[in-house]
Image 1 (cartoon, helix red, strand yellow):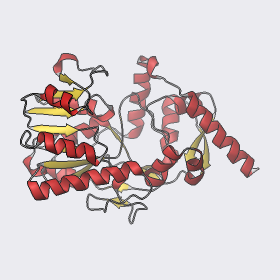
Image 2: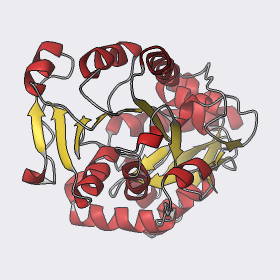
Image 3: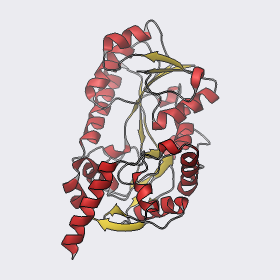
Image 4: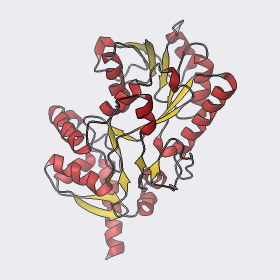
Amino acid sequence: MRILFIGGTGNISTSCTREALSRGIEVYHLNRGKTKSELGGRVTTLSCDIKNRTEVKRAIGDLTFDVVVNWIAFSPEDIEEDISLFTGRTAQYIFISSASVYHKPPRHYIITESTPAYNPFWEYSQKKIACEKRLWRAYSEEGFPMTVVRPSHTYSDGWMPNIWGGRDFTISQRMLDGKRVIVHGDGQSLWTLTHTDDFAVGFAGLLGNPNAIGETFQITSDEAITWDQVHQIVGAALGVEPKIVHIPSEVINRFDSSVGAGLLGDKAYSVVFDNTKIKRFVPGFVCRIPFHEGMRRSVAYLDAHPERRIVEPAVNSLIDRILAAWDAQSS
């Protein structure tokens, strides 16, 4: 089987590439080639500017694929281009959407693929919803062989998740330095974090699966923990007790609308994902890396790669400003 990953060197897609290769799948990456793949010559890279469709067509040439996966489509325009380019050139097109598309505020804390897609708070989610709608129309009207996958908060080794992201080491360094860290709300809303190695197993089971055409899947861990526990587990992996300050999401949003949109449109609500569907289509799929183990792996990775312990001064400054304002208001 030959597959094309548009992107392919990101947080989730790297693990999915590794899993596909382990199954004997021929993997191509279509990207600018600026991020060095840890998989070396095992992947064929087609280098081009994804936004330049003339370059894309030249890079692909006459190649056809059993599966095309777009990891970096964020707008209906991206989908429109892909439908035009890959119609007749792939037996399956997988769009990486987001679990943040589900109805906000939630109507029920248990989320399934049939939960309505509606998010008035976050433009990112609104565009993902629009992408899905365009693909459904292409499937129903033209038979375009699409599959939609909705990851939730998914992290790889070296990531230390928090409300600001987790790719950098800023919040973890604050914990190590004994500084306060912010958790939105009262810290008791439930959240699900999934290691990319676990996600990749479920995802790989959809590649080339004819029964997955015209279907939508969420792929997450079954573990749900509170946001306070997220930060406490990160702290425990680092060997410290985090100093948590609870601040309403609306207050955080006033200081940083980009982070605030992700809170008000996603992270502020308790959600538990029902993974019955992906387990039915991919028998034997189960997530094996609980969050506390994932954090031990991340700390070990960062100890071996200290250059990844990046601290963002702008994020530190923002957190200090929010804390100062909250202290003044509370005094």
